[in-house]
Image 1 (cartoon, rainbow, N blue to C red):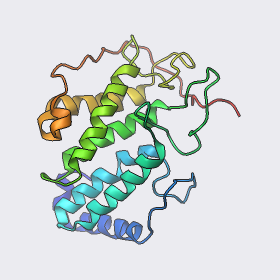
Image 2 (cartoon, rainbow, N blue to C red):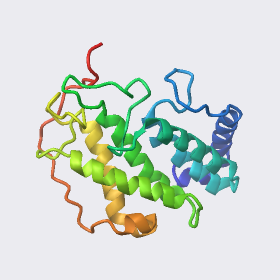
Image 3 (tube, one colour):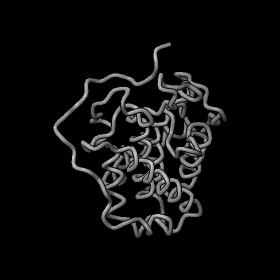
Image 4 (tube, one colour):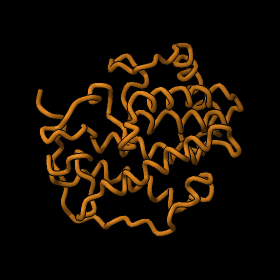
Length: 220
């Protein structure tokens, strides 16, 4: 859903019907990975919460903001590593280690989560009671995202162990850069935590190298 879509009544009804159905199923804590789960994969937050925020803006129905926050918070509590400030892709990765001993952070999932946070902050109303929470998480992730960027300008499949597959992941790169561009362009609107971000973020230009798609998850 885009801002233009909120002016199309028929399209809005489809979104309302879908999210009303989801609202009837309470989000369970822990996020055990199942195909039936609505929130068990972190990169789902790239799509659903920003859409819910736009739907709340279009309809005036605050239930959609409540659902967005419930979904985000459940994923945050279960999948964000508080030490690294990076998200696991899903519950299967929590506790796993790469052959090097590093934690398993798959860059496309973390990049989608990061870009989704930027989209959500754009879509949330101002003021909004929980806005500072999202701004704080986004600012903390920005430090982790910048630290994980490699000298060639890319983010590699494993954020914690870039040597495991040492070639750029274009999916992760596009998502991380999308979040950083929004931060640079609209930081003052993101709240006090993000307003202190540097005006010129040290993002390196990408080289022409790309990767063959391969998961960094260790072999079972």
